[in-house]
Image (tube, rainbow, N blue to C red; front, top):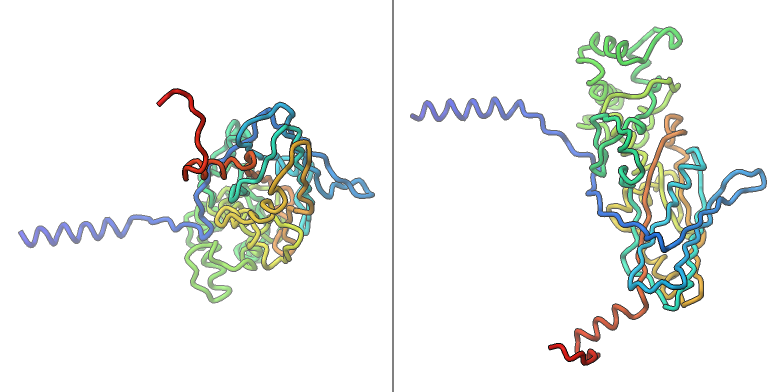
Length: 352
C-alpha cells in the first residue's frame, strides 16, 4: 500500500513539474467598469493650432442643457479619440487639454469626490472588436490585444547578433526566415523569439530576469530600437510588452503644476492612473460648484509622449484611452446624510 502511495506521489510530481505557470506582468491591473455620457449632455472638441497650423491641443466644451434635471451626470469626453483621429505619436509630444463645463441648467452641480479616473478604453466601445484579429496576447488590463497594436520588428542588437555577418538588405525578418535562424541556435521558432530576447539580454547585461517586463526601461527600449522593417510582430509576448510599455511608460496625463520628466513618466502613466486613481483634487477644486447658467474651466492639462524611450515603432501606434468623472446636484449628498440623521423630516404623504 505504501509503495503504491509513493508511486502516486512520484507521478504527481512529474506531472506538476511539467505544468507551465505563466508569470503575470508587473503592470497587471483589473479592468474597471466604465461609464459614458448621455446624449443630452453635449460635447464639442476643437483643435488648438499653432502659427504653423499644427495641432498643439484641444478645447473640450461639455454643456449641461437648459432642461436638464438629473441628480447625477456622467462626464466622459472623447479626448483620446480626438487625439487618435488628428495626430500621430511623436516623441516629446505634449498635447494641451482645456476642459470647460457650461451649466445651462437651473441647478447647481458639483464634482463627485473620487469619481475621476483615466483608463485604457474598452476596445469593444471603439469598434476594434468588429474586425478583431487575435494575437493570443493579453494586455496588463486583461483585454485581448488586437493585431492593430502589434509593433513592427526592428533590427535590434539581439537580431543583428543572431544574423551575425548577414547584411540587413540581404536578410529577412519574416516569420519563416526568423524561425529558421532561431532553430539554428536551439529555439523552437518564432514562438520563442521572446525567450531568445530574454536569454540574450540577460547574458549581455549579466542579469537573471524571468520575464521581459522585468528588464529596465533602457533594455526594453533596446528591444524596440533599430531600423524598423515593414513586418508586424507575431510573437504574443512581444506584442504584450509593447502594449504594456506604451500605456505604463510612454503615454502620461498631467496637470499644469506637475513636473514631468522622461524618467518619472510612469508616475503619471495611464496604467498608474488605473492603479492609484490620480488627479482627484484638481477636479475637486475646479468643479467644486458650477452655478446655474455659469461655466467652470480646468486648463493646462496635457497628454504627453515620453521623449527618451519612445522608439520609431511607436510613431504610428494606435492607442485608445478613457477619461471620466461625475457631477451631482449641489447638496444632494448632504441632504441625504441629514435625512439619515433625522435632521430633515420627510414630507407627509399619507403612506406609511
